[in-house]
Structures are given as C-alpha cells and as structure tokens.
Image (cartoon, rainbow, N blue to C red; front, side):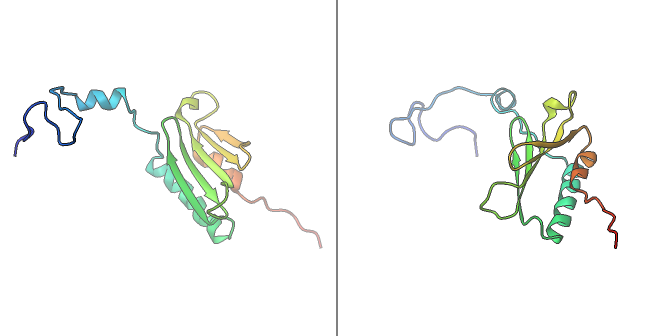
Length: 134
C-alpha cells in the first residue's frame, strides 16, 4: 500500500477533473479554514443533563438538541419536537471576560440569566417555594 495514486499524473477518476501534486499540511488547513467548534465540557453537560432529567420528570420538557457552532454551544429544550425551543442554554466563550460565558434565553430570545458559572445560571429554573396560608 502506498500513498501514490494508481492513475497517471494529470488523469482523474471522474471526467473533466485533473489531479495535481499539491501537498497541504493538514494541521495548517485545520487551523486556517475550520477552527474547532465551541463545545460543552463533560462537567457542564452533566449539570445541564441533570436539570433536563429533572424537568422531564416533572413533565415540563420532552426533547432537546445540542448545537456546536463556531462561536458558541447551544443546548435547546423543547416541549414538543416540532416547535421552537422553550429555552436555550448557551455557552459563548467570547463573553467570558465581560458578562459571563453562560446564558439562558427564553423562546423569544430574551436573556433570563447570564453569568460566569453555569451552576449559578441554571438556578433560574429552580422553583421558588411560596407560603400558603389556610
């Protein structure tokens, strides 16, 4: 097995294409063209999935989606899969030094809570106990 083509130089497998002798360094290509997407780390995902499990148990949420984009990671939760997300939990590293990398947005895009620590931001979903007088 070799890394050389079995076709003569200039000839291609598909009609109308030609081969070339250009060598591209994969490491340089990866850094220049496609920076790695922003992702949730294991501990962050553990906190989010623990919250998700609690809310599914309460019947509030039914589905989720995770998006790893160039500039941020998004965990979206849905009541029904065919609708817009009820909430989006976002991680945006560019805002880490300013308002905080983590934020929770509602269905309309309004930021409900933002901060530097994910555990503190997720407290927006904690139920507040109320005193009931009889």
